[in-house]
Image (cartoon, rainbow, N blue to C red; front, side, top):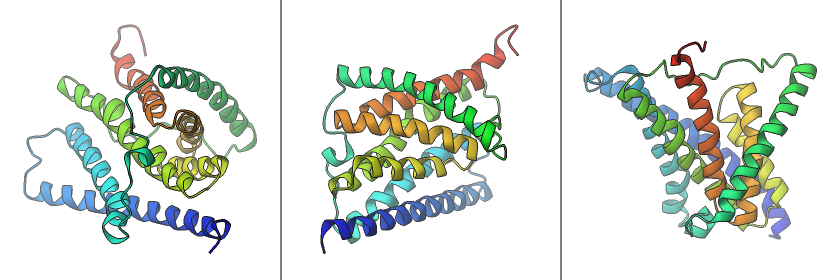
Length: 243
């Protein structure tokens, strides 16, 4: 079958497999922690710490299903180059990340403004449901690690690493690959306003992946963006005089 005929099947199949992997991971994660709660194994943890653990396990299961099953069943073993992790951090990655973050804020601001004007059904001010209440003490460290370190690394491995790498390796154009990956990334966040916002972020991270051949720019952009969100959500409310 010619490549141009295989590509639509690949895109549809990979999209469906990504959705299945995400849903299956969520179900398994919920079942696991429900069982642990029934056994009383989570009593020593606070609600926030339990949520952080659930998030980490969810990422691990998702990665295991999305990458591991094709590896075992189809013998498709992704190499480090396909995943975009075949080299160390370079200055170009930092430059791409900083410029990409600035461009993201500009484009996202314009797009969200247009959405508020022409699609009023989307509440652009709706708060993102993180599942985390205001953390204190060591909880804040755990939440920081999930939001600013572990989450960005795992999501980049999944989306701009594996999904992006598979599509580009099979000849799918950069534009179409970016569109597919960004829509999936936005949909995975479960809210219209958040989904649109992070889809724009994904475009910037895909550009970084294409230019550098690495997910380093995406990881850095993701960490900086989530770091700002962490500060606004969990640090600013605790500062004197700031509401």
